[in-house]
Image (cartoon, rainbow, N blue to C red; front, side, top):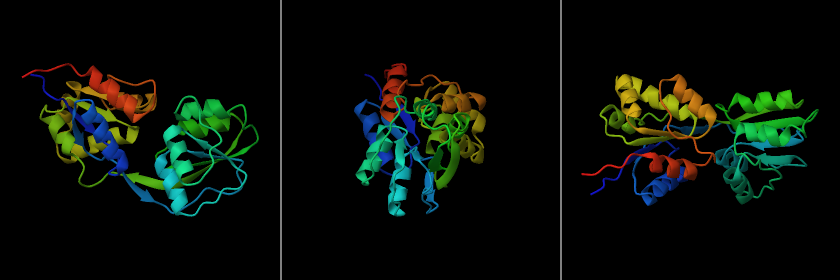
Amino acid sequence: MSISPTVAVFRPDDDRLERAVDVLETLGAEPVPDPMLAVNATGTVPRTDAEYVVFTSKTGAALVSEAGWEPGDEIVCAIGPATADALREKGYAVDLVPDEFTSSGLVTALESRVDGARVEVARSDHGSSVLLEGLDDAGAYVHETILYRLVRPEESGRSVELAAEGDLDAACFTSSLTVEHFLEAAAERGVREDALAGLADATVGVIGEPTAETAASLGIDVDVVPAEATFDALAHETVAAIPSRSE
């Protein structure tokens, strides 16, 4: 008889975590929801003098709507379809979504358009430098507005203990910050090395090469980096890569 693999997921404790749990359950896994990110809104909105405004998350879309942002003639860009859908749900038109749903994909989509243009990047305080540097190299006048800050919830760490005990079959990291917060939670509990050992025996999936690089730099071997930067792709490919077990 096969045993359902335990898979840790670190999404913020909102509809994203609920949906991630549903996806993993559909794939036959036993989800271990352990939010490693919480959102602290700054209450700010994008500047009004930009020709392009770039959003990199559903959270950003929701927060600018709550803060009453009213765009003018800006070209609104979203990093991927989920962010684009969130903006449209709030009544904003979306003009550009890159073929590759990453910061580098956004740079590729915009670099031939933005030489001499003002580009406003509206996102969290932990956004990748790839986007700002790439747009700057393309000749844009880039300004970043911090819409929210990402912090680690005090109660996080359930998955850390399972990993340290060797009871975690897989982990799905969705950003560099989730990797860093996982290890911070492990260090607080005095089980950092044991948790790393547990991850070495588990299947580790991550979204994006920057997350993979962060994991590697912190001593975590990455097994799965899906070509599509979505949680669905991450969950499917990670679960598929877990070695089968039986009782």
